[in-house]
Structures are given as C-alpha cells and as structure tokens.
Image (cartoon, rainbow, N blue to C red; front, side, top):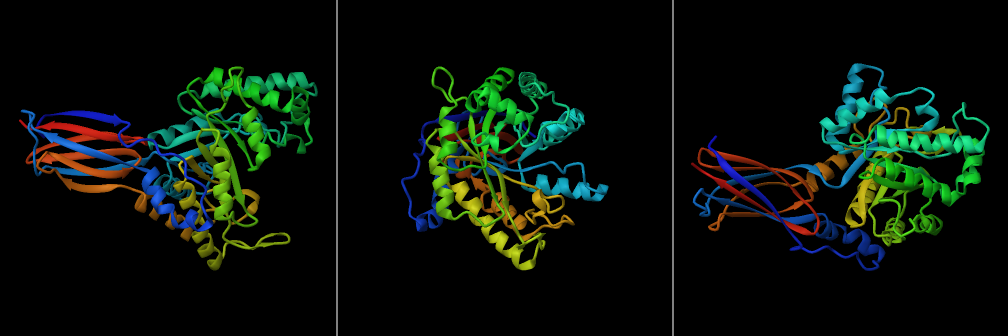
Length: 426
C-alpha cells in the first residue's frame, strides 16, 4: 500500500433540511413512500481523489460500502442468553446482528432488583457495542408490577425509585445511553399496587417530570424517552406538559408502542400518529411493535401458520415502509425476535420457535440490508470526482489508483452533502 492523505469534509446545509410533508391522502401515504424515502433518508456525497500535487485523478476506482444505518432498526434482546442450547444461542445472536442495529435491554424493577443482573446486562451491552448495535434500557419507571420487597410507606417507595433511576443511568453511562425513563404515564392508575399508590401521592405529571430531571442529572448526554401504548391526544397532552421551568421539553424522543395483536394499524392511522407527535419537534421511536403470523382463539393462539406468515410479511413490509418514509421517525423496534417465549404467547416473532426465519424476517432483511442499503462501485471523472446518493449511515470507502489504495470511514447525515477528499500516490 502506498501512502496517502485523507480529508473528510461534511458540507452542511447544501441539501437543506426537508420540511414535514403536507396532509396526504390514503393513496399518497402508500404510493408516495418510495419517493419520501429517497428524499428524507438519503443524501448526496462526492469523493474527490487528488494526487500529491493536488491535481485531480481521473479513472480512480471508488468502492462505496455502507456499514450501518443511521435509522435504528431494533428489537428487544431479552432472550440473548436464554436459549436452550449453545447452537440455538448462536443462531439467535446471528439472526439478531445480521438484521438489526438497535437492542432494547431489560430493566424491569421487580426483576432487576430481586435477582441483580448487572453483569448480565453489561455482557449484553458489550456484545452489542462490539457489533455496532446501539442499546437502550427499558424501563426506569413503570408501575405494571411492584417489587415484593417494597415498604408500605409511599415516601420511602419514591425515595427508592429515585435512587434506582439515578443509579441505573449513572452505572451504565457510556455503555447504555438511551433510556425509556417513564413508561405508560398517560393512565398509570389502572394498576393497583404500591407503586401506583406512590405515583398517585407524588402526582402523575409531577413525578414523571421528576424522573426526567433525575435521569438528566445522571446522564446529561443520554437520550431520554417518554414511552406509551396510548397514541391519542391524551398522550400528546402529557408530552406537552413535560417541560422544565424554561419551557423546554424534558425528553429527547417520544416512544410509541404498536402491539398489533388484534389487527394491524391502517396506513392512515400510522400516518396520523406520526403527524400528531411530530409537532413536538423531537424524533419519534416506535418502541414496541408486533404483528402476528397466526390466528387467535378463545383460550390463546393457534400458532404460526403458513398463510399467516405470508400475511405477516406483507403487513410488516408495509408498516416498516410507511414508518421509514416519515421524516419524524428515528427508530423502529420489534418486540420479541422469535415466537419462543414471545409476549402473551402470540406468534409475533420474526423467527419461529425453532429460530428459523419467517418470511417477515427475510422481507425485512431484503429491505434493511438490500433495497435500503447503499453499495456502489464508481470511477472518478475528469475532475477526479465520484458522486453518489446514499442512505444515511456509516460508510467504508476504498479508493484505488494503480498499486496505491486508501480506505476511509465517513458518514452520511440528513441536511448535508458529504465531501470526502483523498490525496493518494507516491
């Protein structure tokens, strides 16, 4: 390899930041998705190859290889180390990393404290970091169930909850820097337990705000989410109320759950939810998504069927395409990679119980690592430039001029044209 010099120069503002789309008809939501993806999820880039004398080199080979999406395609990773055999465990992990770049890790209080699993979560997060998989902790505050060891005094419960929020965020700082801080705060009192009593005592909105203040103090650089299954104006009103004394929103992203066990959301409904919460000006994360591949019966689920799997694949492709086409969305997380131990026992995994891939998994792989992935082999023109338009994310670029080669890492981001200058030669 011959020596070379490399400059990576992002040129901000050339492409401009796209504005949110105007109200769309049902047909436009579906039929215009590809055009919106081209507009909102890709940017222009130019690789300029120069000799040591600064003159452009025509005919240089430029291999552009995307390595990671900026958009977060995720799943919970609760079953990372619970597979029955080493072979199954290896398969589960390979299926996860082959498709996804984002993992939700478990922080349920009633499980996390009764059987301390700090080392387990550290191992999960480190495994993800080694593979370029971003991580999020879920959740810090939720009253779905109360730990059995909680005292009866509500003030003591609140103090313990505060300690937990601060400890989790600070303990995993630098390893896990995304958090579902408060889960399902729109209607928390449907649960009857000691945590609900404490939350009621502190005030629904007041305690939610307090939890965000604690998380922010423990991890100033962390991405903090509010998360809920409610997708209506009541949840939007809660989102609007979570502001500090200066009027700034206390969270960095809004989490939207979409468990679709009882039927899929229509394109119009998906788009309306995106528009409802986009008005807050922060990214939207679809945090818990399920679409089933088998019918439900009175006492449970039939299980995955061939017909159900094909329908699931079609529905998953449409859902992901619409979500990816709306510029307010930043992340989309599936809930349970496989049917084995899936939530509510539903056949909602992308993998079957034996960890073989359903059509939905293969369909997503062809989108995320195929249709929505950039790989180009280019040749510089007379000005020494090779231009391409790529999906936002991380890239490896290899430039070859005769025996000399240079390898560059760069990233494409929204609202900018990226210019990479390479000086190569003896």
